[in-house]
Amino acid sequence: MKGTNEINPAEFNGNGNGKAVAVLEKPLDSTEAKMVPVTPAPEIEVSAPAEVKTGPETEIQAPLPVPQTPKKKSKKPLIFAALGLGAIVAGNFGYHYWQYASIHQETDNATVAGHIHQVSSRINGTVGEVLVQDNQQVKPGQLLIKLDPRDYQVKLQQSQAALENARRQAEAAEANISLASQTSQGKTAQAQGDIGTANAGISTAQAAIREAQQGVPAAEAAVAQAEAGVPAAQAKVAQADAGIPQAQAKVTEAEAGIAAAQAQLVQAQANLVKTQADYRRYESLQQEGAIARQQLDASKAAYEVAQGQTTAAQQGIAQARARLAQAKEGVTAAIAAVAQAQEGVKQAEAQVAQAKVGIASAQAKVAVAAEGISTAEAKLAASKGGLQQAQATGEQTKVSRSQYDAAKAAIAQSEASVKDAQLQLSYTNITAPAAGQIGRKSVEVGQRVQSGTPLMAIVSNDLWIIANFKETQLANMKPGQKVEIKLDAFGSRKFEGRLDSFSPASGAQFSLLPPDNATGNFTKVVQRIPVKVVFDAESIKGYESRIAPGMSATVNVELK
Image (cartoon, rainbow, N blue to C red):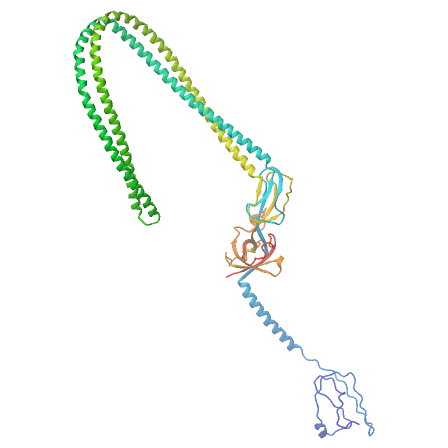
């Protein structure tokens, strides 16, 4: 049986104050009630009061307790605390976001851009070989396509043959010019000479008539003159004999001059060898910086002086030899003068006899002279005709020169045709204009292509970002600022770059139909300005071949 003061742990109320209430088997006085210990127990909910039974000594049942409604705890402090904590978190986040936003500008209106080079043929032709595939990397100047070159090789050969023909025609025309010029000059000179000869013949014939008419008195005078000429001729013989020793002395003097000139030449040549060696040695030293430029110039001047002295010595030898030859000719002339003087004596004696015969021959000369005048006049007329023919040959020279000029023009035209054919032949090899990756290849072997037909495209490896920022975001932007780039193709992967430049106009101004705010109702719209952002080479390392123009990007500019 339970004690009278024992607490039944099954009997608790649900007031939620954390205290247990004991049910006693018998009433306690106030003193005992105060001494009963009340132990706290965990707060539990009791659905119904438990039934207490007494032992066999007594069967007194305690009255059932009345169930009480539990009091709800107020939630206002928790709400206020949550609101305060949220305000603190929101304020902290807002402050940090304000700090971040004040030094950053971001836009997702951005795409990757790059150079796309369209490859096309400059000539018509048939594709003979395609040396690249789609998505292949190429280098500048790399051969991409070969066209069939045979048609253009034939055209080149035709142009070269035409050029060779034009050159041969020019050579023939040039030879005709030279031949016609020489022929014309020769004929002109011959005709002019014939005219002069004919005029001289006429004058001679007229003089002969006068001489023949005056032949008798002249013949008599000639007899007297011939007789007086014998002593004069003898005097000339004596004078010529005296000139021989003088001429021999000049020969001796000239021979001595040759020896002296030869000695001067040897000395000048030795000096030339020495100055030449000095000049070459000074030139080497001056190139090495060992001597001044002035010393080299002085050595060069000495070398040039030695050259002049050598030349002068050689000329002196030539002059001495000329004097020797002249002196020898003087000796020969002196000897000849003696012989001539002796012959003069004989001639003077013969003239005496001849003068006597002159009277008879003078009359015969008159008739001969008259006939000579007629012959000379005929020659004069023929010579004038030859001069006119020579002048006509000069006109032929002008025609040949015109033909030569036309041949030179044909050569220039043929050379231009050869260059054009070579250029057209070179166009059969289509090369890459820049380094990059092949894309949109639409050419195959055997395909007939026309000039300007797109065959493939080369996407350059030089890539950048075109970010279209609002005009209100550009206030603190400037080239060189650091940029963070995210590409949609690579998720959260971040790339680095820098702001390169701003577009000179908004994107709307470059559109097909740019807006005109001066017409109609005006509604202000924030414009977007294209901004060029270049990648940092290190940040895209390993992604070069994966980044392609047209990819979407998000750009964040750090305004520092």
